Amino acid sequence: MRDISRKFNTLRTAKAMAILLLKPSTLKTIREGKVPKGDPLEVARVAAIQAAKETSRIIPYCHPVPVDFVGVNYNLLDDRIEVMVEVKALYRTGVEMEALTAVSVAALTLYDMLKMLDDSMEIAGVRLVEKKGGKSDFRETLDFIPMAAVLVMSDSIAQGAAEDRSGKIIRERLEGEGFRIDSYKIIADDREEIKKSLFEFADRRQLDLVVTTGGTGLGPRDVTPEATREVIEREISAIGEAARAFGLERTPLSMLSRGTAGVRGKTLIINLPGSTKAVAECLDAIFPAVFHALKMIRGGGHGA
Image 1 (cartoon, rainbow, N blue to C red):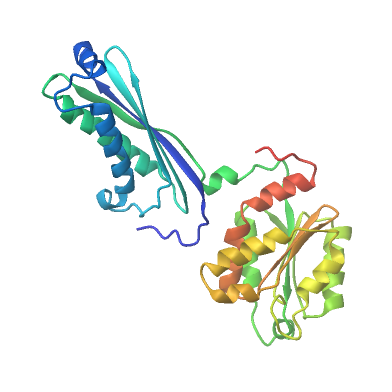
Image 2: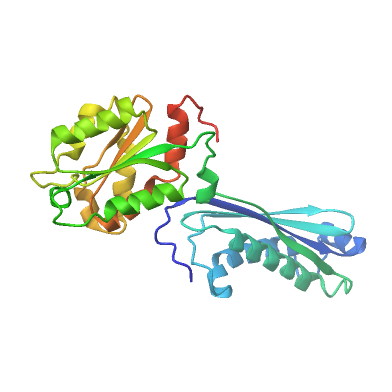
């Protein structure tokens, strides 16, 4: 089973369709309510709902998904029934398999209830019509190559007594997301030095993104949020809140991180913690929303 623990919850939707070919006379019997076993459409509707909820018990590699909605609709034509199923869930993984399983079971249930009337029936096809809500749906294409800086705050690393690992994680992630790294800098936990570096990246180099790591905790030398607030012109508090909320689902220590984020000029500045694990989790939390932020900073609208 694939590890989805690093994903975040979004509204996931999927629509699937199945087609059952049958005789016009069989459709007439359905419309007149004369099927011996009862109303096949309603029984198939219940079967589809149950199948969507039980998909992980049927398909081995499917994750158990807390399904929030299953809708089943029919289109009765001259020689076929089109079965359409929509599934919704607030979860980390998609629900296309739930929709496909549900529509397949609905078609099979119709077949079972009508087989005594029609031995020519055929399930002509099962297909996914639409799926939405995955991370790629929120990734926006930029019409420019974003320039970024990674700023590491640590007395021990600056003195050569420790090796930077969190900054390297940020750099690799940004490069993987298509950023060009303009600067990778290590400094001590010094408030004025932090401000000086941020001013340089935002005012002189006019970079699109600056990601800092370190100095967001409760130690006496942890001053990164304070320095950042003296530099930014507009705070985006929800970025830090989202990162902490994402982390809290994995460790209670996330509540102790005080990182903030904001904009100076056209530069987005984001504070991340110093721990490698926390950095990786925070990056998962803030991407791909960062792309939309960069687009808006340059005057783009909200429409994706």
